[in-house]
Image 1 (tube, rainbow, N blue to C red):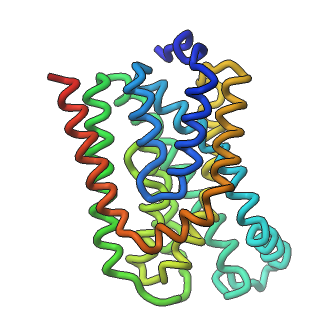
Image 2 (image 1 turned 90 degrees about the vertical axis):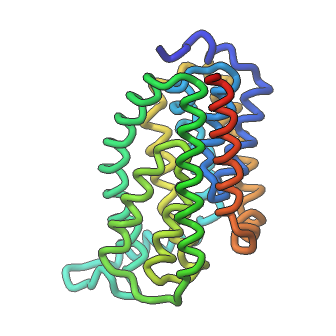
Length: 275
């Protein structure tokens, strides 16, 4: 089941720790959901409950992203308000808003199917097997980032293919171990966009995705309202405080190596738990 009694007894300190982890790792291309799920599974929380709480915490960093990208969000609303029947949706004046809307719509469809598959798999997998599976997905995310780092282009024009592919990638990131930011930014890099633009677009579409993840699981997460509030508040505050610095770090360090390292450790640790 959902380990409701165990989840309800999570201490304030564990809630704060989870909020800090989410607030920091969300901005790194190494799957915050995967890291939080591994921590919870190690605390003997069931695999399906770990996934649901990890998704729920995204709402906290969603608030942080809104605060950080507030000027961009205002500009997106201006773009949408300026649309009319003669507007080219991928003109320079409208392409960002079009990208966010299309990518979000595709994400909803893909994430819905992936989430149902995930819950079924998480219910079937034991703790060690679940941790090892997350490790495999982290390694695959690292492979994608490694390839993408060698493909960065310039600021080419956006087209319909871009938000469709990125939206599908974001939808699949509901799987713990698949980095949302790492996957979506890598797809844009592979499509020939610059690193700066790829990460900006990736984090703009993360905002509706974060609240969607929270709403998807809010009724299933069996937490005391106070504990849930502390975890969300912590992730929001820490997320806002760290996003700027961590975004700069991401542009300098080869995070595919981090994915390989974390993935390898998860596979090893999960294997040991199965022995």
